[in-house]
Image (cartoon, rainbow, N blue to C red; front, side, top):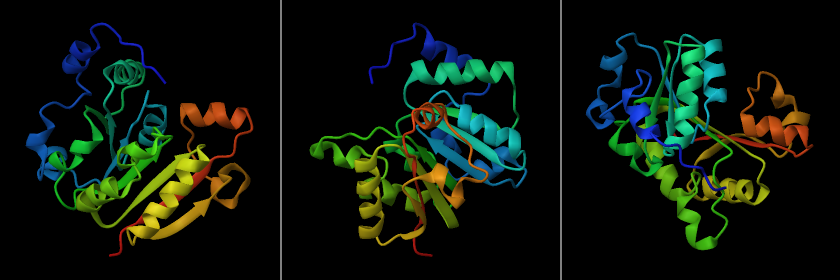
Length: 213
C-alpha cells in the first residue's frame, strides 16, 4: 500500500509531547524514565494507533509504546491522542530494524505485531517482522517471561511465521487460524485493519509465542 506523504508531518511529530525523541539515550534506562515500575509493552508497526490507545485506556497500569516508521501514519495517531490524552502511551518514529539500539536486554515485557507488511517476495523474507532475523532482535529486548502476540489476515505470512517460530526454537502458546470463531476471541482488541477484514468475513490468524526461558 502506498502511503501518502503528509506535508510537515515530521516537524509535527518532533514537536508533539507524546512523541519520544533521542530514544537511543533511553536504552537501559526506560525504568528510570518512567520511574513507576510499570511494565512496558510495545507495538511495532502501530499504524494510526487505535489498538494501542484502547489498550492504554483499559490498562493504566502498563506503559505502551507505539513504534511506527512512517511519519504520515504516526501523525494521525498523535492527532487522535490530542482528542483523548492518555498518560501511559508514548510514540516513537523509527524503523523496527533498529529496535535493539533503543531497548536494552530485558526491558520489554510484551510485543504486539498487528497486520504487518507481508513482504510477499521471497528475497524480502528477512524484512518480515516475524522472520528469524527479527525474532533474534526481540529475544534480546524481551524480559524473561515476555511474550509476542501476532495477528494477521494474510495466511501465507502466518504460515511463514509459524515455521520461523518453530525453526528459531521458540515456544508457541496459542495458534489459531480463525480468531473470531474461536475461544480465544474473548477480550480481543481490534485494530482498524482487523475491523475492516472481519466485516468482510476474512478469518484472522493469531499466534502467541516466546523464547525458551
